[in-house]
Amino acid sequence: MPQRRLLFLDANLMSAYRWQDGQLYPEGSFATDSKGQEAFATYLPEHKKSLFYLLAEVVEEGFQADVIPHVQGSDRTALLKRKVDQYFFGTTLNLAFTMGRETEGRRDDKILFYALTRPQFFEPWLDALRAAECQLTGVYSVSLIANTLVSLLSSKTPRESPRFLLVSLSRGGLRQSFFEQGKLRFSRLTPLLSDSAEEIADACALESTRIHQYLIGQRLVERGAALPAMVLTHPSQIQTFRARCPDSNDLRFEFIDLVAEGRRLKLKTVPQDSRSEALFLHLMARKTPTQQFAQAAERRLFRLWQTKLVLNSMSLVIFLSCMIFSGRQLIQTFQLSENTSEVQQQAQALAQRYEAALKTLPQMPFSSSNLRALIEGYDNLVKRSATLDPMYQRISEALQQSARVELDRLDWKVLRDPEEGLPSSGGPGKPPVPALGGSKSDLFVVIDIYAQLPVTLKNDERTLKTIIEAFSASLTKDGKVQARILKLPFDVESTKALRSTDDSATVVEAPRFSLRLSQKL
View 1 (cartoon, helix red, strand yellow):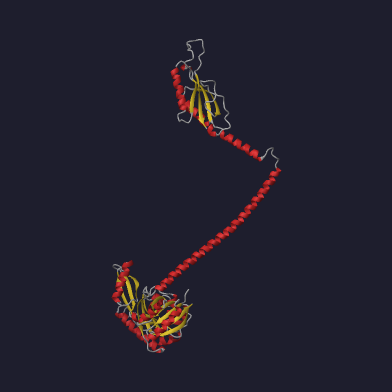
View 2: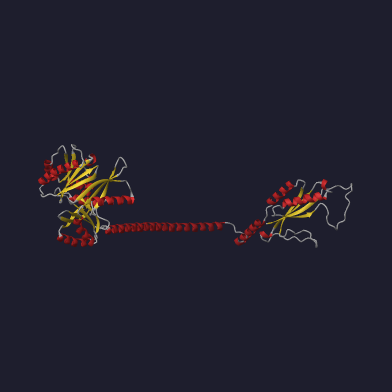
């Protein structure tokens, strides 16, 4: 973090301080003439890496209250700029306070426009800071810092009184700041010609009366209402001020211990008299206001430093996050390594127990490789074994559809060729081929169905043929099963001799038929 250097500028002198942990260390004073400005330009390069704060205590200040429509964004910025140019033309050291909104009508915004009206007085000092490439945090005024001080005072007056005066003494003179609802409304600096506590106290009483009359004329306070006036005073001079600043119907003085307030606000440089610029400088460094007078061009190097600080902070955060993540991964790696060692030791112990258990078992008559081959052969045999449930279900459904068909028996087998064992026109049937030894895709499930039909249909060959064909069709309706009629209840071959069926002495038998179903495994 760079060092902070505080600059206090009044009409006659520029003073430079190094601020550290609430302590002010004087580093030089420069007159407001050309020689002082040259000495200041020589002083700056030695401390160009510091952050500079400029606090001004000058008479040339302007305040103007106004109301503007409640707008946002670029419209508000343009409107405020136009109003500032109207009230304080020719100065870039200006700003605008938002004082709240009106309670009636359009609820316009109440704005206090505030400017340092003699910019040429500041230009040589700002030029020196710019030439030395110093990082200027901002340009502030004592009345602007007083706005911060009011919210930190231990006195109850700022919280209880809607309007009050804050009177402070500095090297530049006697400043009286008027506050309304805890916000700065007006401030005035009166130069003093004497350092005597009695004359300063007389000036405090006189100027407070004058400012009260001015506020009545501006209708900022009511006539006849006592206005509280809080005076920052060194404890050794409180009695002098109290004696020369009596309360009246218009003013009610309250004297605040400057040393006690400084210590409470952690100021380590104890004021030696009633001058309070040390307290204001301390507050400027410790509670820097968000608003200030310098334009963006004057603060460019400070903005670059802020950007660099943010980037460095982000880099540090990312680096620390990576280090934490790497450390966590390293710890997890060690833990996994330890767990792996434990698992390996457990596996070795289990292997030793397994070997010991095997030694206690009786010896097998054949080797483990032969046992493995036997089990694999058994598994293959089980895989090639066909289940007949789907085929039985198919036959059952076909029998339900053909009610005249009566089942005699079923013969089933597993063959490589569904035509095996059937007679052919060229000679005896093919010899059966064993089903084992091939893959499951080369085998067929074969079922021979033997059935009969009603005796009453014995002589009705057409009906018999129709029933048998319908029964066969119901078995093969989905195309997954092939059917072949092996035998019909009548002879249809041309080589067979015709026989008379008109033999009443012969016992009539039911017409029988058979067919073969085959399905590939």
